Length: 360
Image (tube, rainbow, N blue to C red; front, side, top):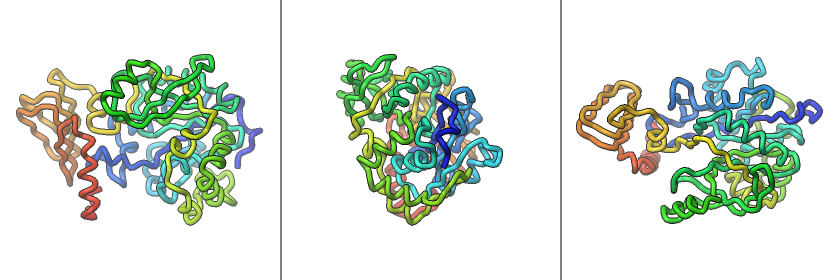
């Protein structure tokens, strides 16, 4: 494992979580090509955009990408050769949610390393403001806080979890009073009006050892399984935990495992354009559109149609006289759904799973 003496003072190690499958963007996103590998917003895949966001060598050290073994070739294609020292790769033998994934990264780091944990598939529209906000959290993290970055809400969103801020800690940071599950519309409107709630973006900053202490205290089964899975592993550029040991880790998120239980949690509000790009509706909201409100990618023709998201990775799509639809075409599947109901894609996923359909 790395030595604390090797760490340049106040530099931060990005830990990019890339193990998700992105099924809510089916049929474009598949198990073998999840959404972080897709160029959903321009010509660069989401993972590449995330890595570009932490490319400032003055603040960020070599990133760590935590991913599934099935993603190795795609990651290498996007990032480059691991031998060039451009990133470190930790390969999860199985999907176990974010708490075990982050625990692997923390155990593979030096105890005093500052880790900036973030998803690989989110949009952040102002990288400079993102970096400035991360800097605000460094002192708190060095003093032993588990720092989370909350996005200032711009609408009463029911699709995100929330963080309620408590007492101020200085420099725009606050204690976390509580984490809140996804609310209904009435409560979301109340949170927006209150002004002390923030969207939970799943972005964290902490010393590796601070996080591991919390995991050992609040989720010991996660800590034990990850420690066993990494036993005997050194400073390899590609870390491959033992599959049998890692399989013993509970599948649990960092929020449920640690953040909702620890008492040293701080939130730093982040005022940036942000989206988890977690549905066709959310992709429409952050994509450019034409004078009819249609957002088009690929071979699509929209005739007397308005407010549609149309994407084709193969066949010609022609839409005539329709409104507010998501129309997604790939060589082997077509999805048509009202944009506002695009979260219902999960029903199609469930049906395909029940049929053992290979098009997942």
